[in-house]
Amino acid sequence: MKLKERYDVIIAGTGPAGAGAARALKGSGLETLAVERSKLPRYKMCSGIVFPSSRKIIEQDFGKIPPNVMCEPVITKGNRVFITNDTPMIDVPFSAFDEGDGLEEEGFNTWRADLDLWLMNQSDAEIADQCSFESFRREDGEYLVELGYQGIRSLARTRYLIGADGTLSRVRRSIFPEFNKKINKLPNYEEIHTGSIDLEPGWLYLFMDRSVTGYFATVFHKDDKIVVVTGVNEKESVKNYFKAFKSHLEQNHGLKSDSVQSRHGIVLTDMSARKNYCLGVDNVLLAGEAGGFLRGGEGITSSLVSGKAAGEAVLESVKKKRPAIKYFRELAADELQKCEHIHASLSAIMGYNVFMRP
Ligand SMILES: Cc1cc2nc3c(=O)[nH]c(=O)nc-3n(C[C@H](O)[C@H](O)[C@H](O)COP(=O)(O)OP(=O)(O)OC[C@H]3O[C@@H](n4cnc5c(N)ncnc54)[C@H](O)[C@@H]3O)c2cc1C
Image (cartoon, rainbow, N blue to C red; front, side, top):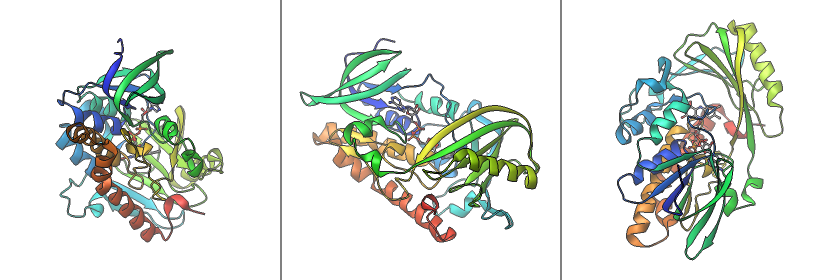
């Protein structure tokens, strides 16, 4: 695909935030380019549970989720939580979080690579993969964006730029170079095993004991695989905690691994837990985790909603000829409140802020 010299909107990142923005712009006539630095479909380290709230938004805005993005067991009933390694497991079905929003009771188990690509394809944006956003500068009232497309540097002009490029957002860094120094980056490590475990499929198992995690460790089934994950605080060794978690699963939950299929790492940030959001400036907007949107551990919903708000803010800005950030702040306000509400509820249950645990 040959990139054009000029677009109305460039979206960096094709996760749910990018897809939410692209979908909101569909049919608007605005020429939109979505760039993704990885080759699509790209692996995304995530439990891949479409919570009932994401399910509702996807079904309303994108359509019925196709079976090819799901994995077995397709239905996820909720979380099963071990507050400590010595306390009994507590069932927390998704319905426990329903605050009269009329949600389905069950979530779906998906492979994020396939879900995200399907979501992106429900827009009319041009999609360029292996195309990384590098930097931008303001020029003649527009933005001149530097992209690395299949290894070659290229430039494109745009009126609006949406950073939907995840936790370590380069778009955010381009606007606020100092911002990353003020956030904690929380490493997560995952191994995908074949084998068996004595835990009933169809639930997302959360382990909160401080000996196995900095906030929570998870284990869940995906097709014939068992996915084991833990996350830690910025200065801790994720590999050491992972070793402790795996050993706990072997000794107490019958984990037997035949082989490790793959290993992955990713960082979360504590932006949302600290209400340290970063929404952008002028006509550069930050959606999804780039902006700090995260409902506790549930990020797909927040990213879809904030991405949609960014797309709609662009439409308002075009209509009213005022900077998009003004409309984005208004349209995203409700989602920021939801994020805060969920962090506050989690803190009330646990007695500490889950992402700021000593
Ligand atoms: C271990 C773990 C488990 C989780 N489980 C769940 C779950 O079960 N359910 C749930 O709802 N949430 C879950 N989350 C949260 C969820 O994964 C994220 O909140 C969500 O993916 C954020 O979406 P996003 O679109 O903001 O960013 P992402 O999904 O991270 O997408 C950002 C995209 O931008 C691309 N990109 C980055 N830099 C550039 C660049 N310079 N140029 C171009 N492209 C770029 C990346 O390759 C990526 O494709 C989990 C998170 C973690 C870490």
